[in-house]
Length: 334
Image 1: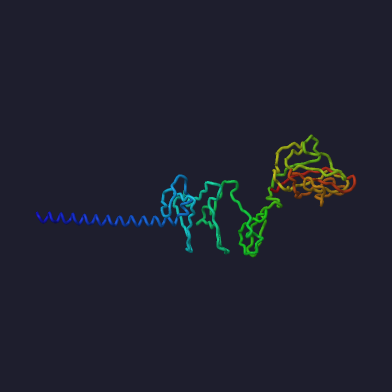
Image 2 (image 1 turned 180 degrees about the vertical axis):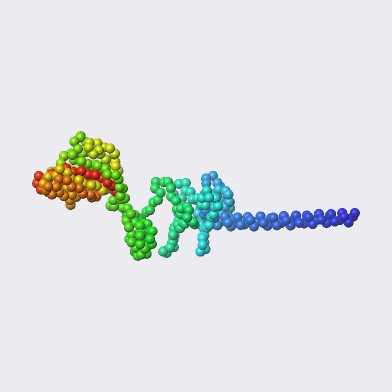
């Protein structure tokens, strides 16, 4: 019986020793985890700073906390690295979440990326998507979804090796590189002096000198050689017989030019009509010609518009020759 009691006492002592050893191990693990948290916090300081909110106490060096709001105050956090892979990597497995969110509560920039190292492959931002789904970059909202500003060291004016797919802004023009090379082959996509994109429309009659109704902004009657030029509004589609407006602004505000058919009818003698932008003081070439015994003829052309979507029509030729004319718009540039 005495021996059994001794055995129990010995077992209790061993159990107490084991519990003490477990306690020491637990303390060591806790300390190591704390150190790992501190070192990890320093490594992700820049990423965590972008989600800082108001009301949080300012964090001192080394006290950044995961799962909490950290306020760096007016301090800057810099993360440097020399790895050939990446300096900072942040992952999120939730398909509905953002991996990194950069927020600026004032009028500044939410996220700024810059490459300070000169080189043909240097990139401020390099975005890609693995697989065939998703978008490398998605821009939404704001005054505009994308803003490209002129760079003094970018675009077709730079004597350097360019790649197919480059887009650049120089002066007031947007350019796209279609052939690689030095400087490569560039196409002007848009500019103030270009017409814009062509918008084909169903044939819309905008003018007929034979109309008899009282129509605002419509000068009627045939044109006679020696008369002044005639302003023709090309904005509204009108009924073939009456000239009344059927569709307003078929050529919208901001249009720079029209593609049109010009028809002469009831012509006498021989002469020509010239078409120039609205308000032009003279002409530089004919748009359509007719000869004796030709009473009707048509021709298609393109004409620049003035800011009020007008063209000026001039007549020339044999003294006393005259003609009615019709303008049908088939498309516009904007």
